[in-house]
Image 1 (tube, helix red, strand yellow):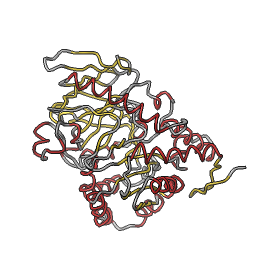
Image 2 (cartoon, one colour):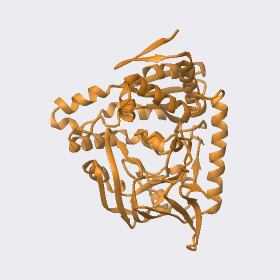
Image 3 (cartoon, rainbow, N blue to C red):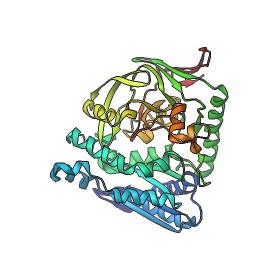
Image 4 (cartoon, helix red, strand yellow):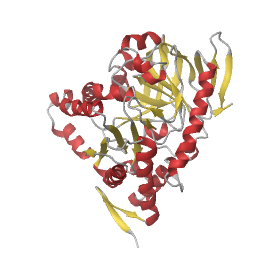
Length: 423
């Protein structure tokens, strides 16, 4: 016998195996991803379509001792109504009271969990200027809360839910239920929720990522050099940079794995030491708009040329957000043989696609990727090369046709990746 879990746009058949995997996903989100402490509050964000997973996570959070779980749900169709009917001035507004409340919750010790699964093309037919203005307003209002996240002052994580719109975007030729079932299967596999003991599997994977980051920290490369079709890019690394991978101990003492899934090791580039041209290897879904075939040229760390075959106007407005939006805040290495890349799926979701390929991020740097960064002032971080911006947007530049060299302080090259794989 099967039961059904109701979704916003119909029903999705829930088999006993599906229910077990969904429960395991909630378990790893709370115990492996979030590292929730007994007595700690949790603030969760999700779309209405993620309600079944949100409820499971809430159950596991309370079983883990959470004092209070507060979930903020959003409705994507209501977001579209704003673009249909709201006055022009609306797009420069954001609910500052809400984001101030989030920042206060985090300062008071709450953990943060986000359930990803938005429609990748939700706003693709809307006015790019209005989309840009709305995103900028949100970024400004969210800045105090986001700084606590980028500094890892709190324990936080992101997991995914197979929503109908996302599934349809990935598998447009399949019936809705079949598309959603296939996406759920991919999420469970990538999140290790389909394994007998997913928490133990995450602990082993976490240890492997830490070992890789430790080896890179021993090398103390001054730069990375990416080469491949449309790409010849030298990324200088920040002074006193640190490579990270897997989980981290937050400022509140809780150990968390921020992204589930994760396959990357990453660090902070030097905002003034990036040179050359780079071409994206996967589409980028940014705030409900698809941006494809991105090609940019850097000089003295700054984008001086940028274009995209699709979504170019959105790209241009994104890099005009502020001065830091034209500079790098992250560089990450991911082998082409990662489980997500090996699945052969294009997820149209950065949480997954960034873990299928090496990538860079425009905008805000993570202070935790600089030695003692959590104790440095913004001016001190900038002096070491860490970038500052309202945005942090990852896009993929790796593939099985990309080579990466580590560049020593004396300029010597050492092979790191060949054809997308670790040497």
